[in-house]
Structure formats: C-alpha cells, structure tokens
Image (cartoon, rainbow, N blue to C red; front, side):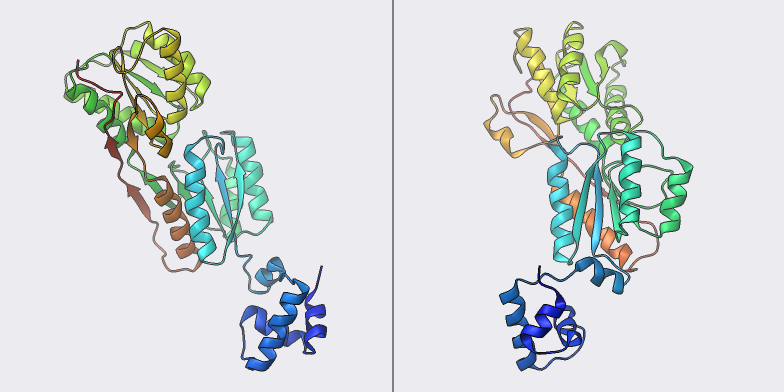
Length: 332
C-alpha cells in the first residue's frame, strides 16, 4: 500500500507539499498540485483518515447503534444518517445491539475507544449503568437519541409522534365502526411502545370504549411474537387489530391465514410503518407511515451541528406520522 512518502518521491516534492494537497490546508502552485494528484492516482494512494483526524482532533467518523438491523425499519434510517454524514465528509461505524443492554454497552465503549466524533443511538430497552453514563459524559462525545427517548441521557433527540400515530390508527378503526379493537404492542419500557399504547388508549377513551386487557398483547417487535400473540388475540374475536410494528404485522397475517381468516373480511388490520413493497401485498396494508429516511438524516444533521458547536441548548425534533388508508380496513 502506497504511503505519503511514496507519493512525495513519485511527484518529486516534499511530504509537506503532499499533505497540503491532500488536506487542502495551504497554497500549492497549480503545477505542483497537478504532479501530486497524478502521483496519487498512479499509486492509488489513500490518505490515513484516522491520522488526519487525530491531527485535527477529529476522526471524521460517527458511531450509529440500532437495536436490530434485520428489522425492516432501521436500514432506511441508517441510510438517512449515512447520506448526511457522507455529504459532510464523515464515515459511519454501524452496530446492532439486538435490543440487549449489555451489547449496547459494548458498542458504546467501542465507539468511545475509537474516538468517534459523535454517536447516533437508538436506545435498547432498559437503563444504562451509571458508569457508562459517566463515561459518555467524560468522553465529551455528543450523542443524538433517535426514534426512542431516554430521559437519563440529557441530549438532543429526534423522534416521531408515537402517541399521535397510535391515536390515528385506533381512531381510524373506531370511525369505521369497530369497538373490539385488538392491540399488539412492542417491548415494554421503550418509548415507542409506550407512546403508541397511549394513543390507542386515548382514542378508546374518547369513544367511550372500555380498555379490554384481553385484547392487548405484548410482543418483542419480531415476526414470531406477532404470530403467537395473533393466535391468542383471535380467540377473543376482535373485529380489528392495530399492530405497532411491521414485523409483528407479518406474524399476525400468518396467524390469520392459519385460522383461515382474511383481512379485511373477517378482521381489519392497521400496521405501524409503511414500506415500498406494500404496493405488492394483496390486500394492500393500511398503515401509519413514518418518515424513516428523514429521521436518520435529521439525526445526523443535529449531531453535526453539535459536533461543530453550532448549537448549545438541547434540541428535541418531533416528526409527524401519516395514515395511509388502503385495503386491509373496512367498515363494520
């Protein structure tokens, strides 16, 4: 692998001149710049970004930690983060915590030891150890919480209105005449789970529909949990089910098929989140659509602003959801 010294020798210039061209840090005559750039191309030279970063007290990298990269929701969020980061000259280091606090801690310590300039964090369920919170504070590395709030970490946050989304979904079903509305919610103690349940509860309350615990099941955001809870809920004969994430919706659809029921003829279904392949589903899913890409892009934008010290006060950005009415819901 070519070094900066090889480039200097090929171009017949000093190492300092090569450094000036690579970093665009001082004036270099057009003739010398052309010779250096030609040598870089010929030798396929790649500057040591870590060394450049340390010299500038920056590594030009961001740590991005999500709970489950296999969950269809997160790749588009990561793409938004990456696109904004790349435009600013940053690379990302991606980790998946699998919704486990211990694995989350491992990755956060890795990010700190690698001296990333900032961290975008989708929090795993549960709290953080006091020592880890102190370590993050002492490192001085800014963190932006994405998608899930966490009160113990006093930092910038980028979210969607989960309570509003839960309300929209449930209100839509109520307006269609449904009163036995099942709910499949996610991991307890996560802000997205709590918010969507609060929206469901609020819509029922406003319609004078009593909350029936038998119609509420708790999953883990995975397909299998949606299937298992779906089988239990269907025994309670709901006329509609609101599922609070897309993976669990797939599980519910499996349970409907197994029971030889169809949507919307037997059970209306609203899913939380929307994806481009919904257009090929039959019937097409009624969904609460989240601005996934925009969430990730904005999180990176806020983090860059914090890294560059453009803002000091804590920021909280909340995006709105939209209801996409399709073919899996119908009037009673």
